[in-house]
Length: 107
Image (cartoon, rainbow, N blue to C red; front, side, top):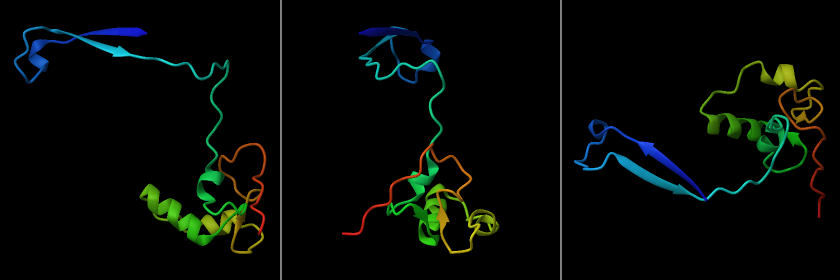
């Protein structure tokens, strides 16, 4: 267990507290140790809601709406290189991991 002691000025506390020492107790669990930086986020997987290995207009619109931004006008022209209306893993220029996702098989 790790114990952190935080000293606070009584003037910063809105309540009338007699003591200026607060003790917070934290349980800490180490889940991974690495010498390098964490891997970049896989935005392709985050946007590909149906897991079919391609990003369609509805998925792109939903992602940008969730982020609170409009879809950039030039996105489809720059990303959909073959003009099929979908952005494949190979076409996607953002952070996407090292291997393409395996598309869900039709049952």
